[in-house]
Image (cartoon, rainbow, N blue to C red; front, side, top):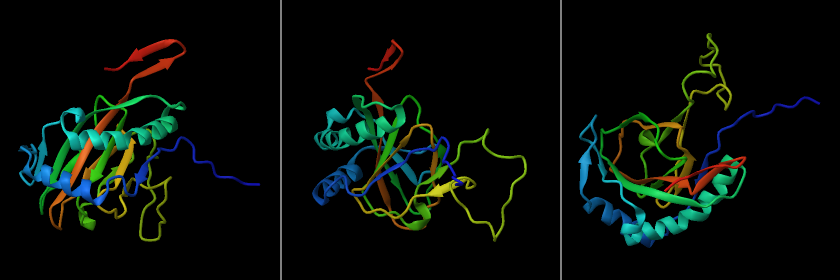
Length: 206
């Protein structure tokens, strides 16, 4: 019997409704009032200062909601249920016409985004296959090609409602394309395990 095996796949988690309507509204109001700095590439994207979630009550509440999801997703990544900490959270406000360049998140193992507003289809987060090592020298592409997980270069988020969250490995390349719709507000965060142990060689993270 023939079998196609998804060898070394990349896990990606979509949580349909992490925050309820009241918490979404509270966080959105706080996000719009918080002090932000313009992105280095465009003035139509701004970011708040990354903060320890324990310094803000709403963020601390969100971190508690995220915690069990991190444990489950971390078990997929590392094969064991570890203790996890959300080390920082920040707000992103993407105005009409703004975009965010392709990037990854350093100094973390799991990253996530919580959506506080709807995203126009043009500005849904796009995730990219990591560059190098997985492509043949010749490509096969065109109108008759069916794209799937083994030949696609990128994948765009499906539509999600405000309050939804996604988790992904921090090394995964992603971007926000040019926003052709209304203001898009998200909370991004990074998380680390308390420690990693490789046959007795333990690294602790603070």
